[in-house]
Length: 175
Figure (cartoon, rainbow, N blue to C red):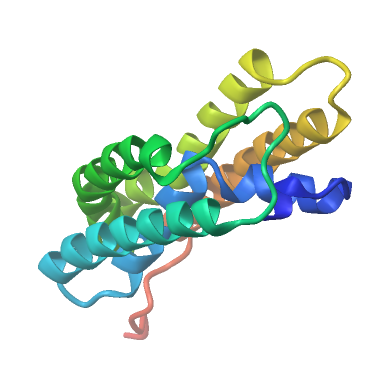
């Protein structure tokens, strides 16, 4: 609904939260908070599939119609629900597992921790290059901020991992 507003902040929020990386981040966080691998995979997939269904139901019930849309019916959005629900079930499990494995206390967690920033950077770059018109200030700023933020998060994670290699372990070093 925020995307149907003319306010630039709401339009930026709509862009940010309706793209794939934000859904991937949700599945990742579900996996991060689950205690078992099985639960991480199942709940991430189920949560994404539920989110997709709710998203399309609200989209169908929304009284405002997007510019250019003529006859938006439940029948016309049901292929979207089906496609994205299957994608949620298939892709939710690996993202949930990535979140679960990112909690590891060792350096092997780093590739899993970098998953969401990498997805965000790649998707924002593709959307910046392909979908954003030169006159679309909201799109240009949004995708630029997402790219800068994802690089900053990735550098922070790598720096933290490097720092953990340099500092002594948590055990006592007294003789």
